[in-house]
Image 1 (cartoon, rainbow, N blue to C red):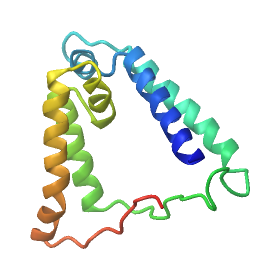
Image 2: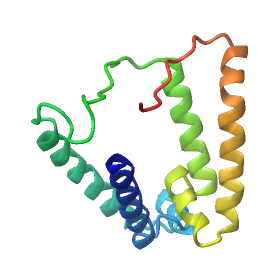
Image 3: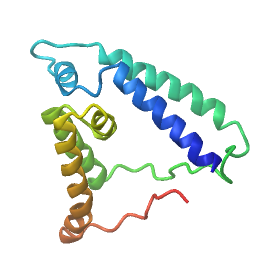
Amino acid sequence: MARNLVALAAGLIFGLGLAISEMVSPLKVKAFLDVAGDWDPSLILVMGSAVVVSFVAFRLILRRPQPVLDLKFDIPTRRDIDGRLVGGAVVFGVGWGLVGLCPGPALSGLVYGNVESFVFVGAMLVGLAIGPRLVTLVGAPPVASATPG
């Protein structure tokens, strides 16, 4: 129960941060990505702040012998860059650039009733459903589930 409450609180803080920074607005994100046009660099501060906070927090938290609400830290062990990683990054980046949304801001945008967010989340759910089937069709090896226990 405590784990779920902490996850809920973290999600609310994350969503609030997205709303305050206007990352839930596809127009704001597209203006940030339009470096050749009317560029709005303000989201660099949002991303830079997130990187700094995460860097410091990870250094402090990983000094502990174990997490407060779990038995062990679940740190990824793979360090290689393969076709799946590059392909996923390309699809993510193209989608972000075309629509101005990524999953976090799209889910947060649902609260505002943004039509773009509803369309994006619907398309994202379809992609999540058919993605594993497409990967199987192209013959890529399956990836172990990363679902937290």
